[in-house]
Image (cartoon, rainbow, N blue to C red; front, side):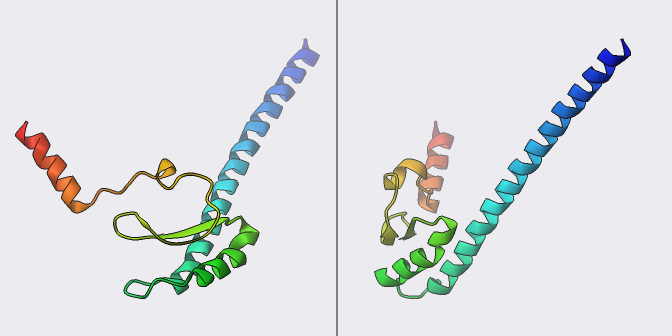
Length: 118
């Protein structure tokens, strides 16, 4: 009976350790992805600043080549309406299929007034 209890205890400990390690790896992976994204955004910040002219396609291509080592395959600049202004690389999906359009202030106020009048 003692051998069976010891075997079960070791099995439970093994499963618990595996689950904890899995959670740690998932957390570390998320942190790594986030930090890579932030590094790409920092690189982009030096190219594009508010009030500055839109960078040339060759500038975006240079950024894409510089960051391709971390997995960047496509870069695009959008205007306030969400329309593409400049891009480089090859995108994997249609422009609006993955990211919903942002609501503008006028769209938000009109939908609020429509709800209030009903």
